[in-house]
Image 1 (tube, rainbow, N blue to C red):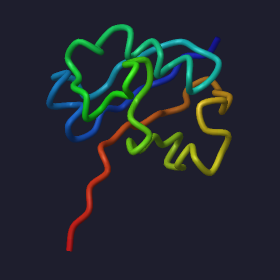
Image 2 (cartoon, rainbow, N blue to C red):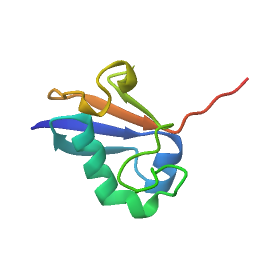
Image 3 (tube, rainbow, N blue to C red):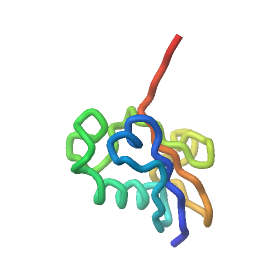
Image 4 (tube, one colour):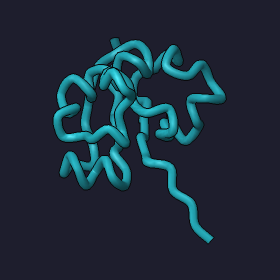
Length: 93
C-alpha cells in the first residue's frame, strides 16, 4: 500500500467541502472506492454510477496530470506520493 493525495476539483470540492484527502491503496480503484465509501452520501446521481459504487464514467480522473483512461483506468498501479485528481468534465468557449 502507498500513500496517495486525492485532490477534489470543482463540484467535488464544493460538495465535500475539502480540496485534498489522503488514502492508502495499490490502485486507482482502491482510492476511489475508499473515497466513495466515505462520501457517497454527499454526492448525487449525476456524479455516481447507477449502483453508487463507482464514479459516473464521464468524470475525469487524472494521475499526476495524466488521464487514467490513457493508462490502465481503475487498474492503474500507484506509487508513493502519487497525486490523483477527480473532476466533473467542463467545457467552455
